Structure formats: C-alpha cells, structure tokens
Image (cartoon, rainbow, N blue to C red; front, side):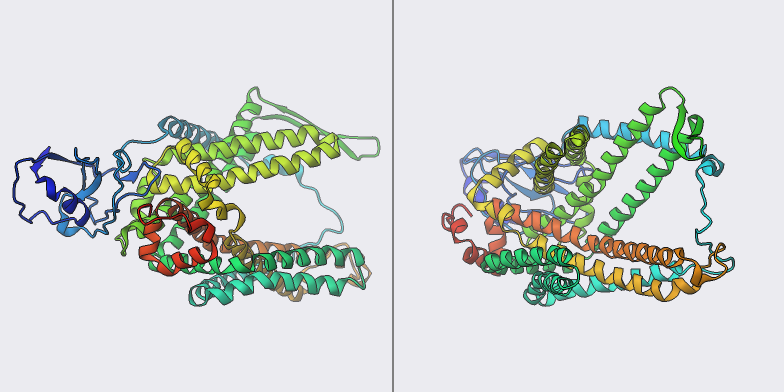
Length: 574
C-alpha cells in the first residue's frame, strides 16, 4: 500500500488538474492521508453510479490507481499511478461522497454462473446429437413430386453467383450510406424519411385503378407516415445532429464494425450449431417414427416414440438456445456502448477502447448481460404461452397479441438503455433498469420514447438496402433460372402448366433471400449506430457537460429543439 502526504489546499488542484507525480508540493500543518491502492490489471474499471465518472482513464497497460475520498468534502476521483503517461480529460467533480467509485467486483455473479452452466450443458447435448446424427435418419422425410423441377447434372445453380453478387452490392450500399450520413447527414436523413413515403404513395396510386384494395393498403401507410413526418418536422434537426455526432465517433473507431461483424457471425454459427444439435439429438433418441395413412394412401398423422427424458432435453435446448441468442447481441450492445462512453468521457482518441470495453462486458458486466437476456426470455415465453392459449378466441387473441406485444417491445427498449448504463457505470442489471425507468419518467429524457427519429431513419435505410438487394437478386434469377431448370415430367415445356409457377416461386425465393442478405448486412451498421444513440441519450441525461464540451453543436441543437428539457439546467448541474 502506497501512502502519500498531500497538503489540504492542493487536494482539489491535484484531483481536478491531475498534477504529475514528479511535481513537488509544500507540506502544511493539516495534511490528510490519501491512500492509493492499485487495481488489478485483469479487471478494467467500470463505474457504478447514476452519474458519470469525473474522467475516464485509459493507457496502454490499464495501470490505474484509485484516489479515495478526501475527508474534507467527500471528493472522489481517479488518479493514475504514472500520471505523465496517461491522457486525462478533467471535469468538475460532484461533492456527493459515494458517487464515483470503481467497480472491481463481478455484478449479478449468480446469474452469470447459471448462464455459463446451462451453456456448457446445452453444448454437450448438442455435441452428442451432432456426433450421432446420420443422413439416413431423415430419409423417411424425403418426398418427391413428378412435377418437381430437377437440377441438371454438371451445371452450377445460378444462386452460386447471384448470392455473392448481391452480397458485394449490399456491402457497397452500406458503405455509401454511411459515407453519406457522415458527409451530409441532413440530406441523407431527409431522403431516408421521405423516400418510403413517396414509394408507398406512388405504388398505391399505380395499383389503385387495377387492384383497389391493394392500392389502399399502400396508400394509407404512405399518407399516415407523411403526416407524422410533417408533425415531426421541427425535431428532424435533432436527429441530424445525433447522427452527425455518432458517425463522427464511428469514424474514429472503425473497429466497432469488426465487433459487429464478429457478433453476427457468432450468432449465425451458434444458431446453426443449435439447430444441427437439436435435430441430431431428436433422431438419436428416436425409437419409432411411422406415417399414418388412410385407405386412399393419404398421410393423416405421424406416430413418434422417443426415449424417456428426450422431451425435457429438447425443451432445455430450445430455452438455452434462445437465451444464448439473446445474450450475443446484448453483449455487443454493451461493448459498443463502452467504446462510445470512453470517447465521450475521455475527450480524446483513446488507445484500444474496444478491447477495454469488451473486457469489462465479458467479465464484471457478464452477469447483468445474462440477467437482461433472461428477462426478455421470460417475457417472450409468457407472450408465446398466452397467444397459444387464446388462439381459439380471435378477439382475445388479437388483444393479447397487441397488448403483450407492446409490453415485450417496451422491455426490449428499456433493456437497450439499461445496457448502456451497465456499459458506462458498471451497474448490476436491476439498478440499471431502475435508473433507466427514472430517466424515462424525467422531463429530460421524454425525447427517448417520443422523438427518436434516428431509428426510423436507419430503418428506412435498411429497407432501401434490402429492397435494392432483393430486386437485384430477383432480376438475376429471372434471366438465369429458366435456362437452368429442367422438368423430367414435361416432354413439352410449353405444355407443362406447373413450369411457370415453379420458376416464379424460385425467383421469388431467391429475391427474398437476397433481400435478407441486404437487411442482415445493414444490421451491422444499425447495431453500431443504435448503441451510439442509447449511450448518447444516457450521457445527455446524466452529464450534459460532457457533450457540451466535446460536441457543442449537438448540445446547442438539443437546446434549440428541446428548450423544455434544458430550460432548468444550471451550470452547477451540468
């Protein structure tokens, strides 16, 4: 333990201005003792308060020390062990004694341990299923139709080049859209808002003379959306400022894209692993499977006999898979929010903030992420059970679907901002959720629920990429599939009435698949921006001074668009 005697008049000066260790200080009569204890390098610090830290410290070795509260005014802040090697951005420190403390212990440790145990158990069961799975197990499900198109031998299916082309085009579109957001956020935002309105209205007007009801289906959403944008016209400037701020940070730390891609690949890989394990374990434990047919040979049912305990194991695999599939994107949310927070509070380009944020998310914040994912799992289970029970009553089913769907969506929305609290301050999940709810109720953050146009802008851009990718894939399939397909049952292709329908179905399927590729790739960008939105809103609510100092244009835009939010702010409260 290292103990130093620092004169009382210099405590604030040393804490706020961060005087290097080599500076000499003159002793006085009243000298409080300040203890500096090192924090283990294995635990990157996070924060456990409802207010932002005094300043964030990042260096290559994460070698930091905690300066305990002074006995004079309860002043608490952080100081490095080697100050001359650390970049600091000082701020005014609140005088409440317990506001700024390092978090060095694991939060929600019990939930994190349960998550790891179920993950290990599910992985073992899935591995057993995959190892014992054989292709002959599902041969009984193979059914053919005389009019089913046959793929000619020696030819490559057009999807072999349609999908890669669509992938490249989708990536290029995402890069173009991000560049447009960064270069001219205002024009891109207005284009993203009004393009869907124009497309819906034009499509509805074109279909109205030929298919009246279908035209109305397109016209009504277009008109309603246009009216809403008209109402929101005075608030669009805030969305523009938000996107400008977020894309500025993303440009500095492009590694966030890599994190988003890795999380997406991990989610897809685990999904494939879980599906393969589930199917393999089902057939591994299958004792009998027989089709029940009537006198005419039509299938009327199926007789399945499974080994004892198989249904419990399969249910466990389903629950475990859903929990883990929720955990991966939530962990990404916490990691990305940590990067944004490090930039906001650090005030300068930080070395390797993604590594530090990932370390915190997968260690001390592992439990809160698992806890929040489990909450969504329970809510989704209740939602599905209620819908299943009320299926026989259409009116009750519709009411439950609407009401519970809103509750589920709201919980997911709360989770997003709760995870931002976890990333910035290192809170446990319950504390983060409570503080998020308090933010929603306060006048300073009503904009989070009512006026967040950023999500609509990004959703519109995602739809644009998906539509372009889908249309491109469908067009390429349209010009290549007819020459590729052959029909063994049709000696005369023109006389085969099923040929056109089959080709049309395949073209549609390929088009939908390409649209899905575009939407998934766009999700990589949306995830990063979404994390930035949540983190920025939390910082706005907790410490306005951070954004006022680092992003003055954004701060002034917030004051001009939401004067009712900022009119009660004082310099002391910033």
